[in-house]
Length: 109
Image (cartoon, rainbow, N blue to C red; front, side, top):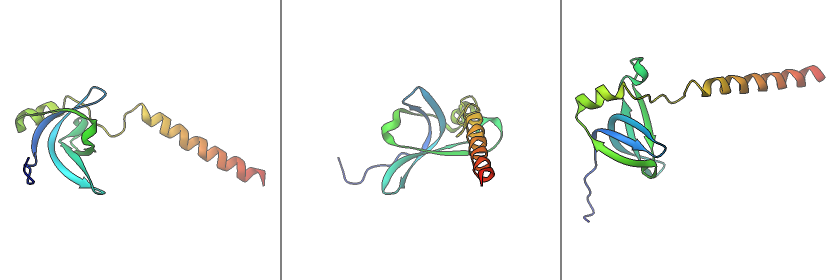
């Protein structure tokens, strides 16, 4: 293998361990001296906002290149939110718990 390797950059279907599928524009990016796959997902979750996520190559099961047209159409069908609605109640409950603990401590003195 030559020292100079061709870097992949383009639209693809990204299959991750855990049966998660993401469509988006893939590129390679180095963070803290380590190589990551950067995925730019257009219009994530139908709200019009783009989303960027980074994945370690060891978390990837398969990369299937697709056309930009297919990548854009399919990205709207697969959720890629960084936080799911199921995590939000947990986050809210944790904040309430911390706030109540602080109030209890203040009330003791």
